[in-house]
Image (cartoon, rainbow, N blue to C red; front, side, top):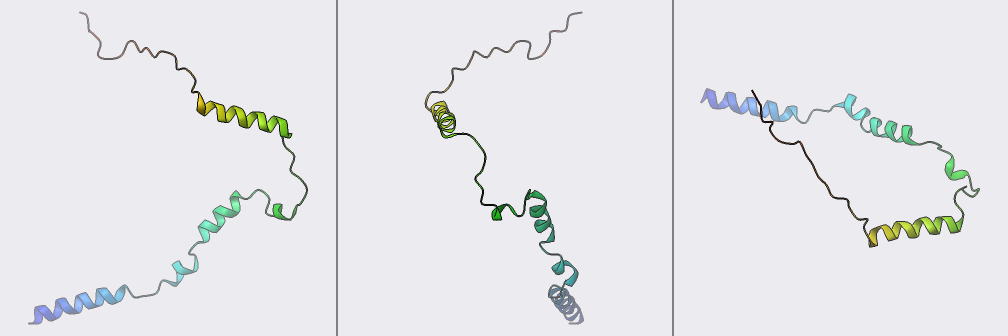
Length: 93
């Protein structure tokens, strides 16, 4: 009987330990993600700038896009692949 009471008390103590607060960990929760996002932002004020973006003109961009689309329609011919000198060597004595 005493053994059952001991194990029941031990289990109850361990289960109640899971309900304890972790204020130190909770206070820092998500800080590393926020720091990583901040480090990946080049210009935090970029949304306030309404000037047009410098880039390609329309015809050049259209040509690039058409070539990109064509690359998926007709795949490039693959050259023959020949591998020599692989495998175990024939040791001569």
